[in-house]
Amino acid sequence: MSFLSAELLAAIHKRAARHDRDNSFPEDDLNDLRTAGYLSAFVPKEFNGAGLSVERICAEQTALAKAAPATALAINMHQIIVGMARYLVAHGNDKGRQVLHDAAAGELFGFGISEPGNDLVLFGSISKAVPDGEGGFSFHGTKVFTSLAPAWTRLLTFGTDDSGDDGPHSVFAILYRDDGGFYVKPRLGHPGHARHPVEHDGARRSPRPRRPGARPHHPRPERRSGGLRHLLALLGVHRRHLPGHRRARHRGGRRAGGHPPQREE
Image (cartoon, rainbow, N blue to C red; front, top):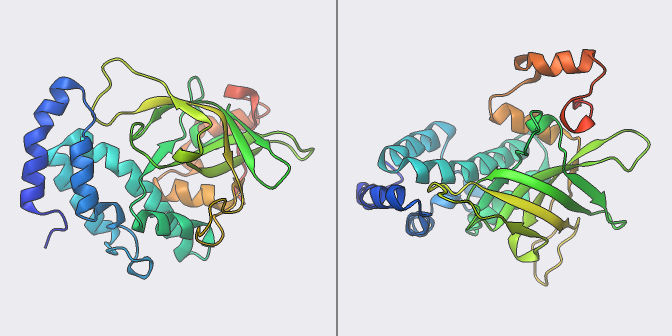
């Protein structure tokens, strides 16, 4: 039995041509998917999600892509982040727990990793992650192709912390939209999946909850941790598949942004 009903897929498909023609963001599709519980479909049952397997979520995404490709691409980035968190927790890393709690509560995750002129992608950032002296970081720089830009409530991003004597570190964090410190740059003729540039202008990530009644312990920003390796594994990427990365290391480890490639731990 499919998670996404035939009626829901038919309604989404009926709107797809209009969104493609108008280059409009499919907010109505997103609202219907949220109502159907699809934002938490990949969340394990013990975190109050539907607990769909990888095979099931891929089948649902395939059905959604047949109905509306742009909508499927947009929501796929949310499902990747949920899958990353699920993988982390399953392998003993509790830093993914808050992502699963938030997804079960209906929060929408965007993917803010790519940068202009930086071919290292997950292996190094030209954005800055600046320590705030309290265990958190502020982020500064431009991200491109940021998924779900008009609608995300949580954004997975990263930057480089080069403040220490032990070399630069990649700092991964989940940013909250209502905390501000960023702005979404407009794009002319943006497609339905709405992958806009986002400028981080001091967006801050604290290691602790800042709202009364927040669930305990938001995951602390990751500094060059195994979480990067888990994310790459989920995306089907591994260092041995990136010969250019090895060549950069042999040339002295300098590529876009002047940062050395990442070490796995």
